[in-house]
Amino acid sequence: MSEHQVLDHVDAYLKLGREYDCSDLHLATAYPPAWRRYGQLSPIWPDHPPLTAEDTERLVRSFLSEEEWKRLDENGDIDFAYVGTDGRYRASIVKQRLGLDMAFRVINGNIRTMEEIGLPTEHLIPLTRYQNGLLLITGAVGSGKSTTLASIVDFINQDREDHILTLEDPIEYVFGCKGCHVNQREVHKHTESFARALRGALREDPDVIMVGEMRDLETIQLALTAAETGHLVLGTLHTGNAPRTLDRVLDVFPTDQRDQIRIMVSESLRGILSQQLVPTIDGNGRVLATELLVNTPAVSNCIREGKTFMLPGVMQTGKHVGMVTMDESLRRLYIKGLISAEELLFRSDDKAQMRSFLQS
Image (cartoon, rainbow, N blue to C red; front, side, top):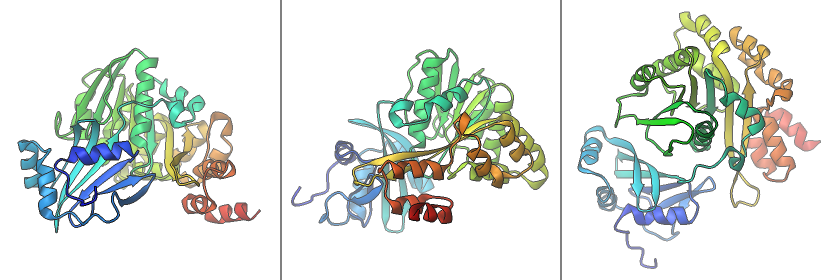
């Protein structure tokens, strides 16, 4: 594309993004068309001029329905699942000072298995076979939580004969019914909020409930109640490791409820899988680092007594049930020669310990 004319439809950019194995595509006012490949954001064409406000408005209008355009106009932003000519995307459009900005997350049509992703299946699968309780998948934005969650739901779909209900914003992966009966509900399309959908969910006789995001007090409270009353609840949180996840869950509650909530969490939690996608040393991809916390009596005790700071120590002694800290997982990737010393140090929790490991 030598003269760099702006393409007529977003699908043309999305097709390119898919071909070149991108995770995200950005079409933003006053910035050239850009993509995120292997964690790095860069312009698609180095010498492409920035998109104008007219360009982005034309591109937005090329794929929004009248109703969606109205919602964007009224609210200033809109998130939804977009089905393009060659696949599904999580689309986000926002109004900003200079014009409109679009961001697309590429959703892989094929749901990858837990083995393909590199999840610790030996210790994760037993956690999916409980009839009740809470299993949390955590990590920063873009760390592959949705992909992991989809692979776990897909495994349950084949492994059990139950009713799975997913509550998402928006629906990303589409699940057919395999061994299970699967219902998928989209927030803003089929229901007004996660909390509302969760309240309704308890009346629909589900066995497994997947909550796309546990982002507020009411949603977390309802998810805990569901986990206690005989449902296996899978949820995601934007936290970096197991101790921070538990602090985050407990901190949303008013102080006078904390003791009671700690007891609830200590009893209903099954496990926490935290993850990061780390750029590989050759720059041609990313590799998954995972931390796994399994709720043993020692872990349960730490939660009940509010001593989450002691969890890394407990996890060190829980290797026999598959527990591994994020630092240990990163260290293994470094020893295998998959990630650089810089990445290892940058992403580790205990930097002092990591420095002495690198110097030894």
